[in-house]
Length: 76
Image (cartoon, rainbow, N blue to C red):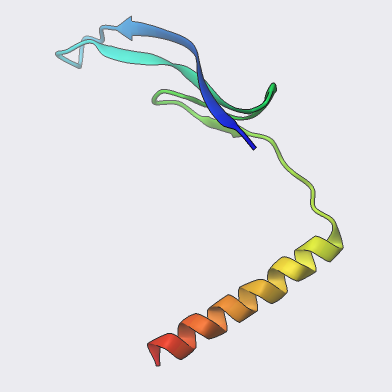
């Protein structure tokens, strides 16, 4: 799986309350041609929701319990 970050747009902004100019813009995180997340500089975060099957959620929950037990055993 190849993940890439693409700079979609950017600009230099000069605000009265900030002495130095700042960069502003947006970038996306892509897997292949699909955008899986995007973020604006100093802005909101956007993303896609990925539905998972009940079977996979159960496997992940079981694994989470095993990891937690391992950590607790190591720390005790």
